[in-house]
Length: 101
Image: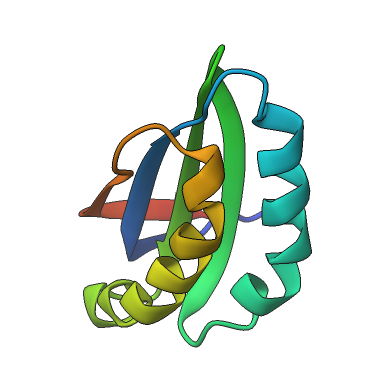
């Protein structure tokens, strides 16, 4: 019997506009950060999806809002490394939500 559990969580969403012709480079940089990101306290999981021709959307699932907010220094570090590849400022928000396991 398969049992489904629903959990309350905090969900972060970050939308990043990538400069024309820099998508592959952006993926490589983000791929190099996955181990660091996956070790974040309170992080349940994350994903990065190409949501437009030059747009990436990252989503993280956290145990709570405090954990999602505590990521700010790591987020700023990754975004500063991505600066040459990004058009404009990334948009990041934290929202209440659920995740299913």
